[in-house]
Image (cartoon, rainbow, N blue to C red; front, side, top):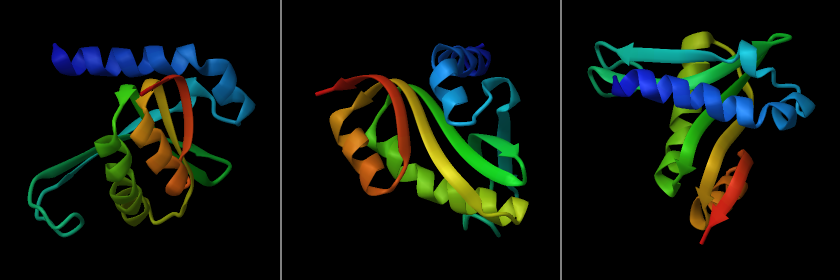
Length: 126
């Protein structure tokens, strides 16, 4: 049940920010779940590690989209590794990374800016 809630919540958050995403060329309805399990550890260095992120492939470009109800610094810090894995598996360069969140912690927002991750959010939490 928890996993289903997570998927439903992600879709709801994408819908909340639909207009903003569409202005950036992201169609929420075309965003797909990318889930990869590294069976032998060759990609991530950890056997059995699961990488879970949303992606959009459009016009031969790949966009990574992390969706959270509340984005914390740990989520931001994990994104570069997720991007590396997506690029390795798909054999394509990730064009842009987005973090979409209802709420984002101030330190997560600042880290995302440092890492050139575009944020779309409702509130910054101090």
